[in-house]
Length: 234
Image 1 (cartoon, rainbow, N blue to C red):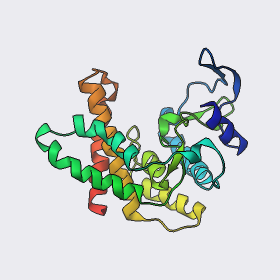
Image 2 (cartoon, rainbow, N blue to C red):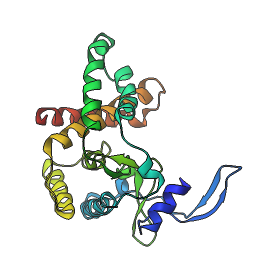
Image 3 (cartoon, rainbow, N blue to C red):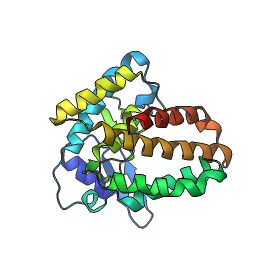
């Protein structure tokens, strides 16, 4: 966390300031960003903040490779399969798991073959905060790594915690690709949406049905809908 924070801060990205670190106790004293997440904003304010988040994401994805920890890690086949393990175990009926395995392997191979940029990996409304000065700030970025840009895009525009209309999603995606100056790959975006939403779906079912944490129950169907929306685009 400390190393990735320093890297992102060096590039002017809005991470919390680190006031002190005690490595032996594994403690970090961080800037207090308050308790307002993008998720908490009323719908009338959320659109502008989502556009700001898209612009910020384009900046992150545009960072050139250098000798830094995030560029030493890759969203490779093993990482993709690891993220889908909970889906395989808890997201489908056990009668279908044997048949599902090779298909998830194919998905992992396809994701690993895509071009990569620096991604924050969990870029969604619970990890974007609004500080006391009204600035958009980043949290939960310690797993930043090289991955397809569509990984972060799918996490944001198909955020399981937000209800977005298709027109809003399309506008956000268009804004991103304009900022990046490149053309979108609809198949790549669909592939990463399937991967991300299967991951969410499996995790939400696991924590709800096994851990009995009912906070995630309301989001199960939204994650499932994201998968079903993306499948026809593949």
